[in-house]
Amino acid sequence: MKLKGIFNIKLFGVPRAVGVGLALRLMVAVALILPALAQQAADRLPVQRPGTVQPVSDAPADSVTDPPTDIGPETIFPHFSDTRFWFSGQANFIFQTHPPFHAPYNGKNSLSPKYEKATSRVLTLYTGVRLNNSTELLVDIEEAGGAALTTGLGVAGAPNLDIVRNPLLSKAPYLGRGMIHKVFALSKDKIENQRSPFSLFDELPRRRLEIRFGKFSMVDFFDQNSVGSDTHFQFTNWSVDNNGAYDYAADTRGYTVGLTADYEDRNWGFRFSEALMPKVANGIDLVWRPWQVHAENFEYELRRGVIPKKAGVVRVLAFTNSANMGIYRDAITQFEKGLVSAPDITYHPWHITRKYGFGINLEQNLAPNFTAFARFGWDNGKTESFAYTEIDQTFAGGLGANGVLWHRRYDRAGLAFVSNAISKDHQTYLADGGYGFLIGDGALNYGRENILETYYTAHVWRGIYVAPGLQHIVNPGYNRDRGPVLVPSFRLHLEF
Image 1 (spheres, rainbow, N blue to C red):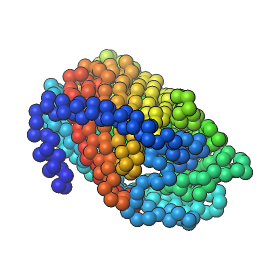
Image 2 (cartoon, rainbow, N blue to C red):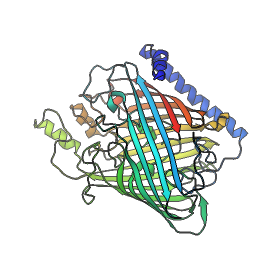
Image 3 (cartoon, rainbow, N blue to C red):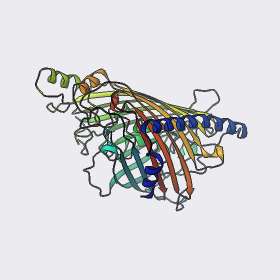
Image 4 (tube, rainbow, N blue to C red):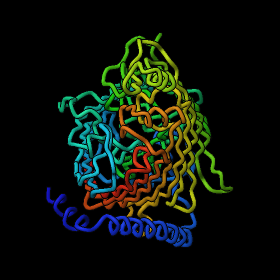
């Protein structure tokens, strides 16, 4: 692609120190510009636009908006708005690279210290049919391919959430989502609903119970955030777009099979899910014995800001997984007794262990079309990281601005910082030469993995968007001996 040549010539013919300095100056500039734009907008736009945080949530009239829901994303082809059918699509291409960085040693799961470049793609066809006023069938066909930097290894907060973590998987299209969505009305009054691939209804009961059954991604409905959950328009880092410590049930491509129940009231909601877990860490096959291997997810959502008279959302998350997972302390003990040449978390007979964790997810409007967000996550850290990534504790925070502020209504920009950590047992396991499914350098000089990310998404024409971005990763894979790493990116997104 031509874009690759542009990046190579313009950005990376410089020494590493110069590149890092340039990255930090750009990030500081974004951090200074966004609040200034927000203050100007606050002076010009005293009234907040109405909108909702999620398409299926009953948020207050002054809730956080990204983008304003009265316009939605621009698309190449118009969508049907008065029919019981849904048909749309998207294509997301993300090019990333990194210059050489300091690394005195490498392991089999290390991010390569040599210059790399990679382009990922995700193509999705969204379809759906509303069977009656309370039931609909949603089916999405997806194709994911391309490549990832070092095949997705070496960084717990990996820089590209769109990558396929197993390059040996088939490149053929597959069923991404296939679910039945049923709404039970618990009140007679209705609220307007913004139609989307996840909900085709034009209106919903204000108080309701929504049941979904089938194949889906857990983070379609849990841990959502209006400015930090979408690789199509926003950030691309795994631990910025999702809670890194949320080891949610998923196969290699990020999907599971299960049931969700979502109770929604005027200003709050509560959702629960029961789902299947994979056979092995990061595996593509699920275990179809839910009485043995299963995952439970709980989330309470309060649509109220933490700043008086400012809209916001507070979400509290909990999860528990039961699967054939190893215990880090057991693997370390095997190594110390000389039973294995290096600790191996997979070296154990079939047995069911439990992993659990918690999370907090905040959104807070600071000014019209300018929103801050934050996440905290923790899991018990004694049990093997299994389905998402190798993070046992995470703090994340950032800012998101909509282009309405600078008269570019479909544009958006953001800045985020995240700090990830692992448990003491997990640290010892890696230091002794153990490997997880994502990280492992053969040794470890432990330090928190700190990541700064910024992006700007520009609307070019109709449903065509381009987005330059930049990430600065300190202590990749929690190793002070390696890095820092500078990861520029360029995203092309098409909405059909």
